[in-house]
Length: 315
Image (cartoon, rainbow, N blue to C red):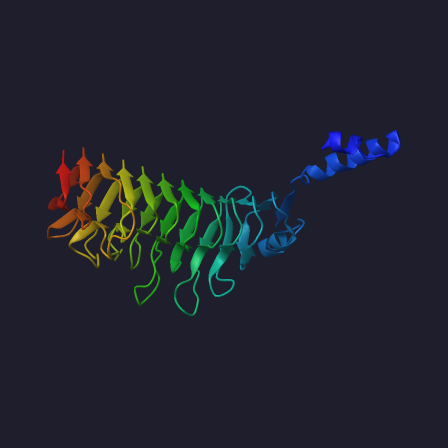
């Protein structure tokens, strides 16, 4: 760039000024921190989101905010400042409390609760953009905890809780429902008492559920603990899992290919999980409807459990 400027027939001082201007223009604006809360810059999270630019951080101070937002920026972080930042009871666009349309968005240390919309498919987060990371957040009594549409995206959920989601009378919602994305990675997170639907429903090309807790508990009525309805690579490792007495699907805990295998299924691995069946009748831990052999390794079963139905091996 500078060599081309030096070739321009301008006085030396003008060439220097032009070079400096181009260098400044080439650097992105410095990221800012926008604060939300009583006596802070913005009263509502949505106001901060409207004012934010790519790369900014929005910090939400403790409090209950009846608010929602559509996030169109890229590389944006929205995080609670300390404990107790809650967004509740309002959904944007008939979709979610937070609709993420940008790329590389981080949601951290927030509680998102009671997302309800007319078509009963509301969500704490509706992921419609690129990569999304959710950390240390809570999703309570939503129709879906997280609902993600198909796209070239990676969705990572870490150290988070999903309690009492699937609040849809017509069984149209889930703890999380991830459509056809590149990767769904869920780690060190808890799913408890999902009301209807599944704790985790994933059409991702690769689904990883690692060191999580998935439990119906005494009141939960979920169908599957994990549903990969179109196949795809599935890795389920180191989890504590329980199927409760009120489950709406008594026969299976995990299902692979229940709606037809339509994408490459390179491997199916279920390793070092502890699964408890709290029903009075037998249930199957993994029902594999794909042609890819499922490998069950080192799992511990409690109650009346059939480890595998379909292609695969149990070690």
